[in-house]
Length: 303
Image 1 (tube, helix red, strand yellow):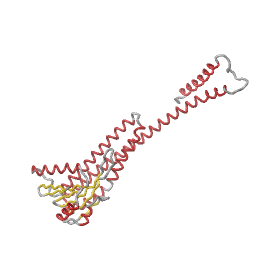
Image 2: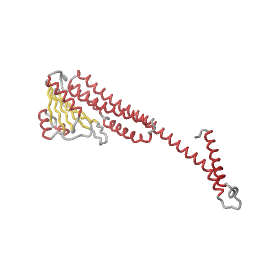
Image 3: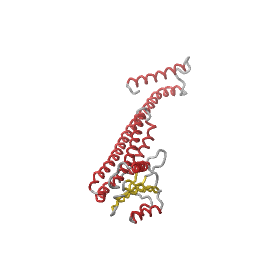
Image 4: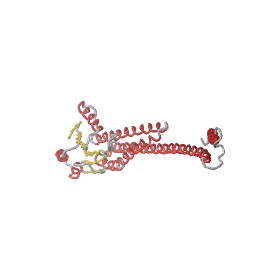
């Protein structure tokens, strides 16, 4: 699907899951290099930036976190000229839809301008995309805070799987964004050559926007690591307490079991056995031994 927006001499063409005919039309209208046309025909695996005579070709992959669904990177191809911007994507994107509405409103009301060249449209788009990632990371931070509260509420065992799920999301985010800094730094050089030195501040701002995202990912990973260590420590402490309790109970039961076993030996002379109230005497003996050991453990603060 091809959507075309115009505003004060600037053109933005957005293609969602484009057909071969749409790609050929755009390639002919804007004299695109055959290598670029080939790249636009299908998704690519790695981000890249190429500088041509009249435009810059940029590919970036953005992570998408969907609850209870498989995660997929979303590729967006940008072709940035002085008076035009072409975006190519292979599925829906809420951020691009939001910016397109801004573009349409500005054009309809004939108020405001995005800037003297199409680089400013790209600047706005990428800034909004990174802003959406910051919101995603804010939601991850909230999840970690909730997990922290539940850990200290005694739900350590249940939080093991929750921590693993958040860890998977953060590792996916880190992997997906790993090449953005290199691509943006290369784009900063190419952008100054094509769009002029006056655009250098905005190019550096984009690197700064990504640095904020990168810092939030790192901060969440460190917070997650601390929570996991705390959760493991609390689980280990609980397990040690349970094992200690079982060990003490077994130690208390051992002397009592030994005494009863002695009276079960079939010998000629067995004291107590056979006398009046012999059962209750044995019960009192066993109970006295258990109570004495229990009192001793409490005195030593082992219980």
